[in-house]
Length: 124
Image (cartoon, rainbow, N blue to C red):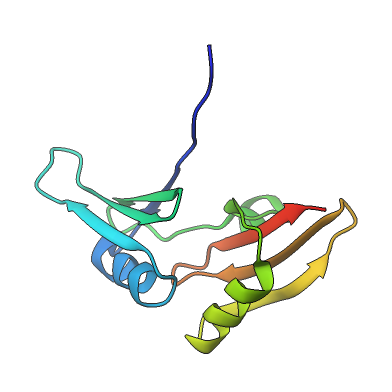
């Protein structure tokens, strides 16, 4: 038996608005499944996929708010500096600039349009 991949599922109050943000600001490609019984939008960039679902108008409550710390997704990336520079140029809200953590990762953190914190890093 082998596990192959994992995808984050992000409920959102405005699925189209969130998808547009991920395309315009974060460089993802979007595929809509809004005619499906369970409406969703898949977002792709390289080997990463995020799946947006409708939250029936409910507000997104990020993990750091619910539990006092933590992100909502962690994406492994080799050249964090180049990605941070790309996002900075597009006006993405970078809440933690590239740094080395006390758990030996190099990472930076953005806040998406719904308030989620997404970490981009790798173990050194």
